[in-house]
Image 1 (cartoon, one colour):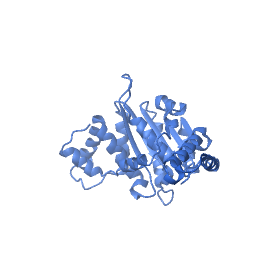
Image 2: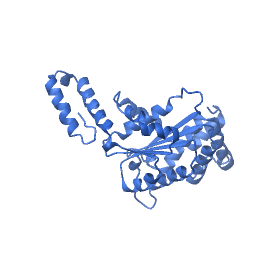
Image 3: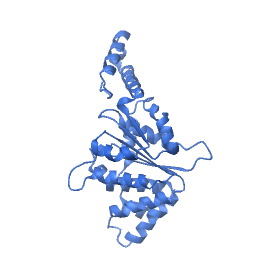
Image 4: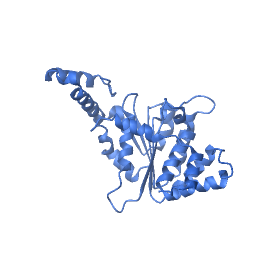
Length: 276
């Protein structure tokens, strides 16, 4: 952890990162226990953690991608039990329609850099050096995207352990205007993946939009398609059962009615979580 001193405070105030933990905590508070675990126990996920580069999780709206993302983050935040495993640093960013600051490359960079620098002295020193060299005489001047990108690259190249960067709901970043924020983030992900750093893992969730797929498919060492996953179907059934079991009126239904409701809803879910 970086020291809690005046310089550290000044650097964080200058960076002014959006708060990604709010999105994560809100998602975890609505997560149904027992669901999503299939992903972090899957062969694709375990291979990606060990030797992969970029993991792309794609699915239609309502497929539970953000809940899966939060489960990925929780799994990566657990300290390794194997003493031979490197130190692990995890940073995440939830893109969202509801917050314009969380739809931009700048917002993503500031959040990721803040998280990395607060979890590693090595990373903190890289960020502090950028601040001291370029901005300490004028802390009101905010960092450029170019400086933030170069800072992130330098952090990762000087990494003293494994680093995981997780980005959720990339499709919720706008793909219009003169400068597409979605394309800017895709360019960053491509740039990072092409560094081929052995201690860097990237994970992205999104809808299977054409522009996203055209960039991520060639880069992805592993691709999980939720619509074709039988484990996703099992999760939806478990979710429906848990909602019925926790609802006072539904609890009183006869067993045959409960089974009919579960079967009907799961058969017609089409890979999406239903609202009960």
